[in-house]
Length: 306
Image 1 (cartoon, rainbow, N blue to C red):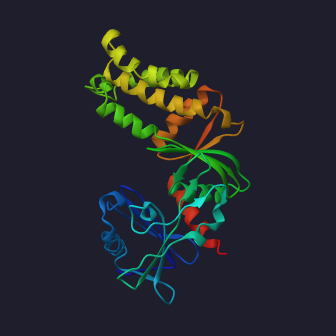
Image 2: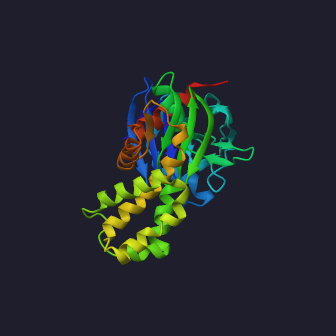
Image 3: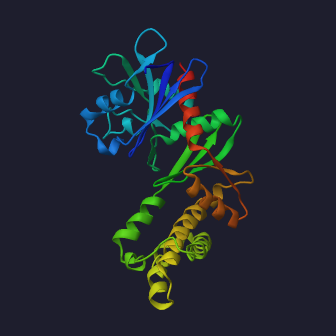
């Protein structure tokens, strides 16, 4: 059955591909997902992956189906590199920086939004998060403050309306996995990691990270020492490592946190952990729906044309 839409919004991540058909009134007509994320595709595979996902989807307008893409399809190792906008930058210019890869199927006209970079001695990059930030600005009129986007590579961004002033990255999620699986600490995780002691371990680790973020390298070894000397079980150790890394991340960004709640954009479970640690320093975190945010960002990007 053919589905007729005004345009299609796409979030092309490293692991997965998501698309939403948008009707003329802005409502979502359908949602489609695919496991064909950027990390599983060669450059030549992208057109076929998109064509397969949008099979039996047609444009309500004359001409090809407009597809607006954010995320890793625009990375250097993706479909077609979309050069970064340099911060500070106004995110209303995202569509102006889009690239348009060729499609063998002329019925589909894709455009890939750029990421944002930071230079001048504070080199950093984001790709996909900039669309989420624009979505937050669109849904929260007049917002000005710090935004946290927990994940494999967490982002902390200073946002003023639709303008990114500066941002930083913390490799918290990746460090947890690397340390858990490839370091000497792995010997402390031989068992059930989600047992009842995980919560206590998380709270202890978060407190240590918040109090002394500068001592992370030394404190990390307490995971191993605790299991050897104090009988700490794998669930406690996993919680401690997670809490220590998140506590260190938040402690390192403590100077950015004001009186207002910090918007948290990510998975619900991870955002809940960040909100818990923020509460330990008297701050608060407000979890935002990541799908709603990215859709709002894609819609907003499409609406701003120079």
